Image (cartoon, rainbow, N blue to C red; front, side):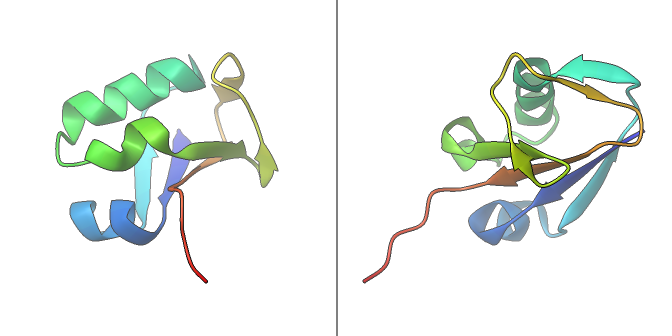
Length: 78
């Protein structure tokens, strides 16, 4: 099981901060595609940064059972 955290607009679109994904091993690019298929309302997911266990990672990184993956949308401010 992979624990996925969503923040800001991503959390608001799904209505919850945490998703549990029944995978034991998956690349971050495949995880992103899976989430975009299962939650089509996550339109901002394609531009979100990804972190595994609180460290930024690229899309070739593999998430494994027990990992925590965070999708962090871009933010702006002044």
